[in-house]
Image (cartoon, rainbow over all chains, first blue to last red; front, side):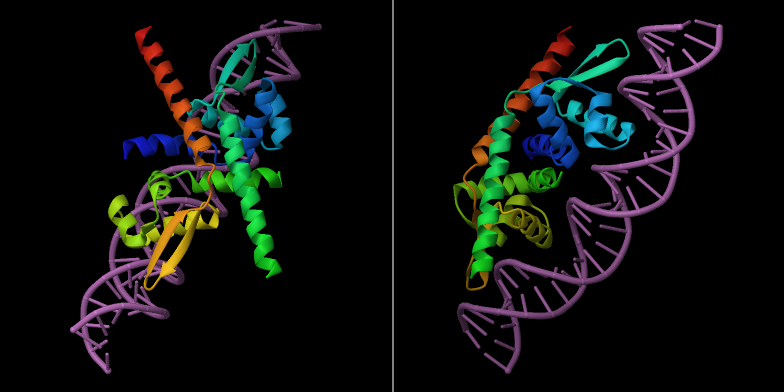
Length: 102
Length: 102
DNA sequence: CCTATTTATGGTGGTATTGCCATAAATGCA
DNA sequence: TGCATTTATGGCAATACCACCATAAATAGG
């Protein structure tokens, strides 16, 4: 069961819309907290905590340059995750349509 | 942002150790609620609710046969998810070792 | 018909998550 | 030094999640 707790901890870090947005953005290039705060549109402290969650899970890494902190994606396996999610969403949509059409 | 909420809903369904155990078990073959309750080792009502969460997310499907309900995996994309999680866990372990060794 | 089995659901208490505010710490610049 | 900028953290209230208990509903068997 220990094994599944470790896995669930990663999934939990992925289980928030703002964090998914952040992750996908960081996949393109690194960003400062200020930039990510503008992107997400929440309080700076809120974004900082989201970043902390992603970091604890080992999904992102940071690089300090003077007073600003640049975050970047640490792992290279996210495409598998995105694909899985998108597949499920497509299936669900298809089922919904089928249910309505009947 | 709507798009990320839909994605996060799927990730949320994956963000619990019991649900991950259930999913991985169902990948092999369909199971009844009783079987899954024994497997997880929680209350039957708890397992039933976990299954409801997985179903709402579109991750599992059910088939009723008399009084028993058989659940089965509905999507075929989970391997991408497992691989991503495992990769992250391996990376984290490696980093931990490196941090201790220094 | 009565009973046992199987599953789902309402209720409840405890815990965790989330968001914002205020603020501290660190850095850079005039 | 004084001040602005950038992040991180503690505090707190609202919400969501989770586990169990009790129980209802449906079916199968005697």
